[in-house]
Length: 618
Ligand code: SF4
Ligand code: SF4
Image 1: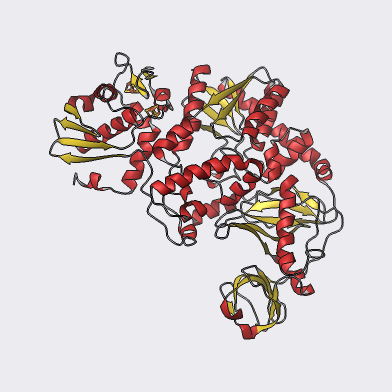
Image 2: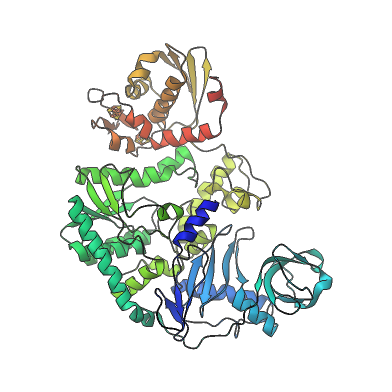
């Protein structure tokens, strides 16, 4: 965790503010410019559209609940920034007039938005005795300290858990806290007071773009020459991954500038759980730009996977393989059998993983694909300003405050992001919540599992689980196969298989491993049980057998295995469902068994729980 923070700290975006004109700058110029000190990685982006209204509504509600208003405290400017910060759920710091005025937070415990005033806002609240505040007789304030009722000189305290602006005796220290019982206040954060004033001027984003024109042209030139040099180096057909997001839009534009429309294919991966708005936007954009658009469609694969695996989670992301890698690899293999150069809109400020990624790399999940990111060094502000400058058509979902688009039920999302997205597509979430509800009910997962979004983890992190009344152990995910040993016999028990268990199917799938095939003496089928008599009691054989059983009867037809098969020996089994191994073509290399995401994630989950089965071999 500490090293992750260090990585983000190291790549921290450098942003500035023009104090005379009052707007953000991506570069330092002139004397009246200050550096913005944002929480790492500081990848701040413009607050626009409905999200702008949302931010000020949350601020207004906070002040109104104290019987006051934010007028004279927080100026309502046209150019303001938001920067995501670490919190139990979605939290962004809001930058106005070069200052972090506070955080907009989604409070999952109470399912509501909150405003936490900071720095310039606290300074003004104390100065004007506005909003919820407490002036104390204490010489200083420090984080974690509890202010007693007797230490409070004057105050306007909330009846609920709203944040309170705090000041020490001589106002040298300011802070923010929350009310405890008996009129005591817990100090959440404190700092040394700095006087703040409002800046003059209220320019719009067009003005900001005009100041950045030369800067953006230089960035564009660098990216275009990078694209051309990589293209020359690899001499591979070019494909652009266009997700419908802002980063891929800019990448698309840069690659077209560098290579022209003729040389490129645009690939959109429709995971089947994209916002319908994104699908429509991608098609319209491709049409408008006259692009050769190929769609890697996962169809209903997610829902088939859900019926076997349960909801995906941050630590159980079977969904990416099934809905992204499998259809994308299939399409790329068909169109570019000898490999391709894929340009993607990946930036180092987005995550620790991306901060550590090089600008050009070999894609581990897409064989033969070299990936390159022309905008690796671009900040979110660079991307937004470039879009404004080039007047590129932006996915309308960004105007709702959705900073990261993609699968609408992605478990990596915060609950606050789902809340923002619900304002656009409530219907999608109603369906998802129903699915989750019935899953929770049938596995006795408790009401917090849904309410707090605990479904987003198999192993719930401590900062989230402490918000729950109780956290039930989540043993509900993965293909429901279990087995036990009886001497040299393995007895498999199957619950809710997707394919009807038959001997033919199991024999067909067993063909993928020579070692396994040679170790099977006999197979017998009972109602829900399969008994396999082995020639030897061997852990690795049983593990191979378990993979084969999962593939034979819980296949979700993603065809990821077929992508990896060196002999093209895997087909969909039209008669029985699932897949069919063309035994004459199969060389029994076993790759397909290793690459099946349903088997892989089910077994990974089991091994992380060190279940009794693996211990029974000791
Ligand atoms: S067996 Fe193949 S098609 Fe079926 S789920 Fe596994 S990888 Fe997908
Ligand atoms: S990957 Fe292909 S050749 Fe290898 S075992 Fe599987 S089906 Fe056979």
